[in-house]
Structures are given as structure tokens and as C-alpha cells.
Length: 43
Image 1 (cartoon, one colour):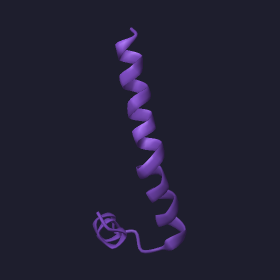
Image 2 (cartoon, one colour):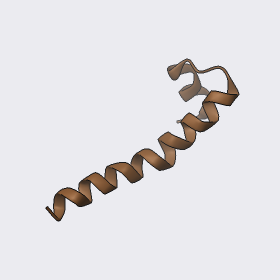
Image 3 (cartoon, one colour):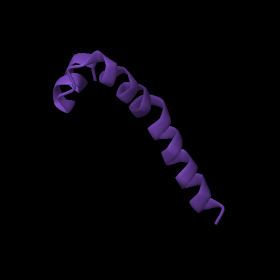
Image 4 (cartoon, helix red, strand yellow):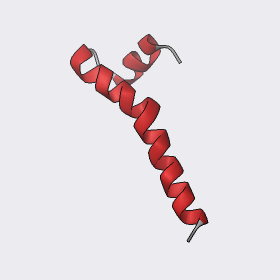
């Protein structure tokens, strides 16, 4: 999805808030999902 579509869907119009949220959605959230998934595999 493009940046403009994500910005419109989340209703975040301030760049100071949009950049960190985009970083979290792109890198931190998938990493967290992988950690939870891996933890369940080795449980």
C-alpha cells in the first residue's frame, strides 16, 4: 500500500506522528509477531 493510502486510512495527517507509526508497522510489528510465533513453536 502507498504512504498516502495508509495516511488516509489511519487519519494521521501530522508527519511527526506518521513517520514513527509507519516504522512501527513496517519493522517492529512483524518482528514482534515472529517472536511470539517462535516462542510458541519452542514451548
